[in-house]
Length: 324
Ligand code: GLV
Ligand code: MG
Image 1 (spheres, helix red, strand yellow):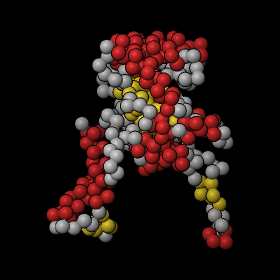
Image 2 (cartoon, helix red, strand yellow):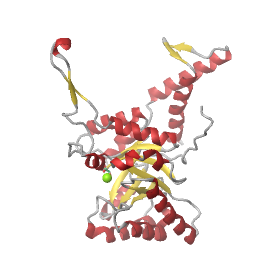
Image 3 (tube, protein in one colour):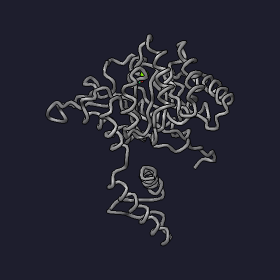
Image 4 (cartoon, protein in one colour):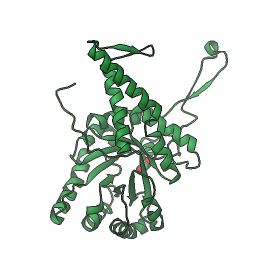
């Protein structure tokens, strides 16, 4: 390990993150009873300009009056380039900040964006005498945000997680798609018919680099990487495939833009019994190897060593966090 110790963000279950428009209060009660780990009440892109003010009021009332037990509560504020942002922060944190665990900052572009919100939130918390500090979740969804992702990730002690906002990221990078996440038939390779006989098409994952890049910045700063939305809520298999790809790359969770996606995200983002059993076998085998003075042994014909202990511990710790 490096001499530099990575301080980890507070442990928080973040397998599913349900998006609920602040302008639709009729959805709040159902959301509060759902199995989502985190809920963000949205003031940004799901809310039309004329509805922003009422959405803020709805959110303040709901945070104060509804029973959100068992959930981490967040609000997605408007971007720093809008005049809505300061009131989102001031009104909601002043009037309901004690019920807020997180603030989600969209389209964050630089470390200075994070600093600005940190300053504002700190002043409000101090003025109100709140004891609990509100954490930050950042959506990496612009070319600028991705370019500065390391600096953003280390910009505040409030930082808890980075989220990949695929739709805005596509717009910002001018990617040729109008889908929200998922695959694209144009991002494919054709096999060479001289080598493969037939000419086959293999679809690739056009989001691979962006998610991996964000995962590295998040983990290097002790934050949770979370994959963002999958727009086609009538395609559960497509959602699960996207969530599995993100999980394999290190993401801890995925957004649910529809209640039907909550269970899917929770399922994919929880290590399976099979994975946990295998991880425990690795830990047992390595403990035995160590007692015999060996650093590497074979388990079922495969090499395992000290790195395998660290991999296995990640899975066992996650299953313990879910069970607790
Ligand atoms: C989320 O905000 C996205 O743009 O995908
Ligand atoms: Mg967005």
